[in-house]
Length: 477
Image 1 (cartoon, rainbow, N blue to C red):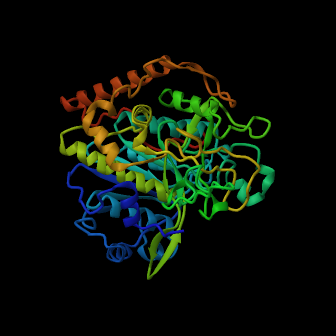
Image 2 (image 1 turned 180 degrees about the vertical axis):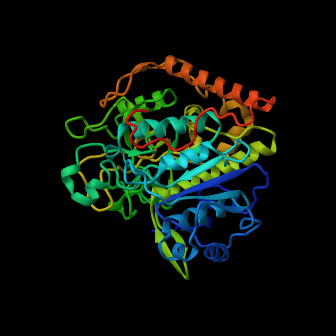
Image 3 (image 1 turned 90 degrees about the vertical axis):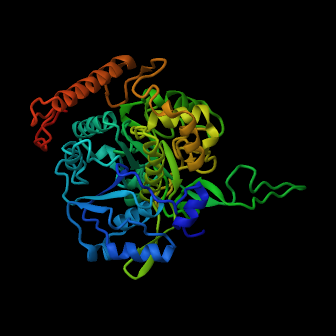
């Protein structure tokens, strides 16, 4: 399998990596947790080694929180990968390395709520427009009140016009419990969170292979088909991908309006039949994820003086984030607002311009990184619960956005045809979609009114929400 480099990604997705981002408001952030740091000297050496022009990237790279460069060269594989690839593919973009090294007391995992409270306390003029999050955990290990609160914070960011992309996970349909404890955890879709939140864009993983459409590898007495060009298939550990793309359906959050048609089509299609509940327990009415996918295997990352190969949806996520920053550049230069909450746009493009995505049709996510379960979700034509809508062709999406500039905002927070929501298996609230949308629109109007009030000389210290960290003994959102 070929090693993944910035040049390979640039060619595969038609990303103009040697053209700098110039708009002063265009900005991107990588969120880092659990003591992950990067080394600026390694970043300089990586640019030189990969033939990437530096432009002003180092000068426009800033830090929030703490960083230990020497530790980054030894133990910071995640952070090094994020920063090296996101700044290579979106050269010269204003980048914030947002470090939150503590532990979330409610989950003993990444402090997502601490990070979100910091974002909420950041003024609109200063908050990065795009956020790449390469972390996600088993949703079933988190308290429901915590997931609901984090989901609400993501909804607020969506209303503010901020893009959040989250890795879908690296252990397939049943999560890292299968990787650690074996097949006794097979048979249930253990979704990841926050990648299964309906208010973030979830990013799955692919790898390159010659057998990338069903006809490749076909053999009969008269015909033997070998496809000459590598194409994308689902990234799976049993095919050498190193990890398996996470994906499935949320047990906590209902299927949102923007993906109803695409997900319903997947549940009914016959290319790769969805397992029955007797084979795999999952919530058919839940939020389906991922939304997009991209190459996630065999990334070359400079760690000190050595290159190391790394794989994960934590690699495909900053890749997509770099694309979004470049799409935003095109809009900002033409005095248009940034893309903001992506998901309604993704599914509208998928419906109207499916060729804008490379449709992943081969592979499944039945395996974890080390153990394979009997069944998982399979790739299929159109959206699927392994690769989402597929991987975007950067130039085609950019062309679509130029020709229909308002597509990014049409039906952003409402469905053209309200979809009745079915209660989730874990007791999520049900009800007509229009009620939920009305609540969202009321909140958006209230936020807008508050901004206008402050701008006109109202109380300058007025805060809509107390952004301090909530007490951890609260058990309800």
